[in-house]
Amino acid sequence: MQTDSSRDALEVSARFALIPTTAAFADAFCARHAIERAVALRLRLVIEELFTNTVNHGYGGESDAVIRIALALDDGDLVLQYEDAAPAFDPRERWSAPPAGLDQSVDDRPVGGLGVHLVGELVRDARYSREAGHNRLTLVVRR
Image (cartoon, rainbow, N blue to C red):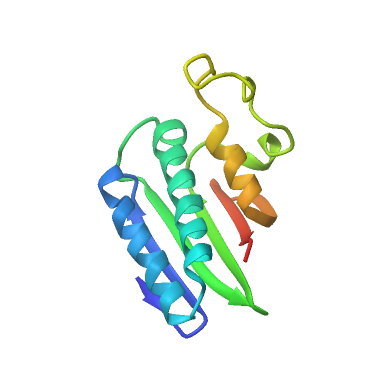
């Protein structure tokens, strides 16, 4: 982990056992910057959803492939930068409409799409780019 007063960065392998490491990283950043608990929990949820999707769908399973997470404060905004080397994928394309079957019971609802939709609801600004074979998602988490 690299740390300075305004930006923290974490680099981990794409392994589910490291989700608690990402949560601890987010919690430590939020505690150090006196970010409200509710916001910290939203941040953790966003990171976990992105991480899980990268492992399952981007990398096709657990691996030693790298996931990079950076957190910063920018004029009071909580900014998350998330990067992986999975195939190109811009999750913002799925944020505009709720996933299919959302009005159905849990047992009848098709699997998939809810998490990425939830991420879209928890952020107020998002940018995506594909650079040097990496997906780079920059999100401003709602406070």
